[in-house]
Image 1 (spheres, protein in one colour):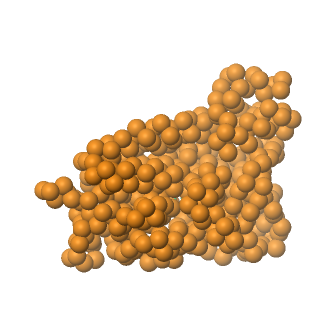
Image 2 (image 1 turned 60 degrees about the vertical axis):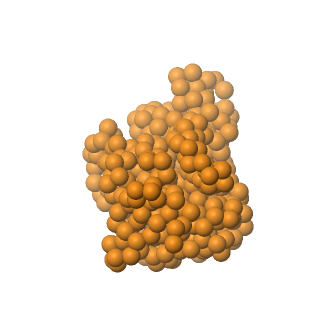
Image 3 (image 1 turned 180 degrees about the vertical axis):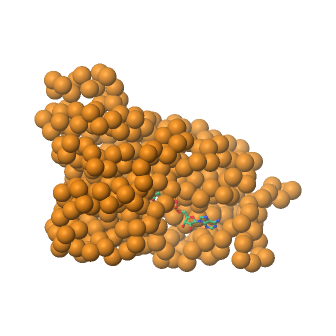
Amino acid sequence: MLWEVMIVGAGPAGSMVALHLASQGHRVLLIDKQRFPRDKICGDGLIPDAIRCLQRAGLYEKVSKVGWKTKKITAFSPSRIRFEVPGDFLTVKRLIFDEILAREAVSRGVTFCQGTVQTISRDSDGTVRASFSESPRQVRARIGIIATGADISLLKNLGMVSQPRASAVALRCYVRSSFNLDQLVISFDCSIIPGYAWIFPVGGEEYNVGCGMAYRDGVKTRGNLKEIFHNFVTEFPLARELMKQGKILTPLQGALLRCGLKGSHPFKDGNLLAIGETIGATFPFTGEGIGKAMETGELAASIVHQSLVKGNFEYLREFPRLLEEELRPRYWGYQVAENWLSKAWLNDLIARRARKSRFLQNAFAGIITETVDPQTIFSVRGILKSLWM
Ligand SMILES: Cc1cc2nc3c(=O)[nH]c(=O)nc-3n(C[C@H](O)[C@H](O)[C@H](O)COP(=O)(O)OP(=O)(O)OC[C@H]3O[C@@H](n4cnc5c(N)ncnc54)[C@H](O)[C@@H]3O)c2cc1C
């Protein structure tokens, strides 16, 4: 059987492109190496870009029913200066979230297949062929989409990777605690520099607690993540209190992140696309990537639909340009924030000003909802402006 579209990886990127294409009547095969529900190491936080994506897919009601909602993030600078960023945020365990998406794709007509894709190749007639590591079976499609997250082995074999090293690494565990925390907490505490850490309530007295660290210029910044986690839960007052009244439910587990919309090519050979974290769709600095993974899925769905309807695969060549136009500007501010806020003194200065400056408060809220250009803050002009506004 020749599928119209074959998608490898049923995370947020893969399931989102699959469900949009199936909704438009296309024959779609969605492949994942894991049986669902499956866990994914993550902070489980959904920021406004993810929420908007779910709304466009008609899935927000379903997801928010099983999620935990809040209207603010509280951030702490290295010297523990606290400031709040308002917005609509949601947390949902990935075990649940990813299954909702994959199931929705299936209910809209997608065929789900469990198997580890070992190779992707092109036949002489141009069709895409996938082979599996567990069995001799093979599948073929007119268009192939790779959405395998931080695992770039398929892309590497296809020569689609320009930077094999990941951008960051992070780990997390779940904690049950009677300590009552009703907001998302992000900390750049001096006890964990060069890392950052979070406490995200996920409902039912459970918390996703973790920390991460960026690799700068391809070199891992000094520090051991497990040590950073230990320092966070013993030194940072809110985390210490949470742990005092609770217990760790799951082992600390880590995973790599690919950030900044770079490191891989999103298009190859006329009918192969890559989306989500495989092409570095995760935001630098915060490590939030679910929303942008789904957005790359939406963009891929629109261009694949157009190509199939018009019977002209030349449209697929536009995918890299579409990504650049629609998404590239969103990454700029997060990259600058990562560079600036990793400097403790600047992080403290901005946090101190953010407590008083209405201009900075509005700008932070606007950056998260993507209604304000990040240069509003992250520029010399922006910093100077925050000193008097
Ligand atoms: C510790 C940590 C905390 C994070 N916290 C947040 C957060 O709070 N909010 C947020 O928005 N983002 C967060 N992220 C980032 C987020 O997890 C990713 O951006 C997101 O999962 C990317 O989605 P994706 O669909 O591209 O890939 P994934 O979700 O990784 O999905 C890829 C899928 O491909 C499958 N696969 C891989 N290889 C193959 C193969 N060869 N054959 C078949 N299937 C295959 C995998 O089984 C998987 O299901 C965090 C990341 C980490 C590591």
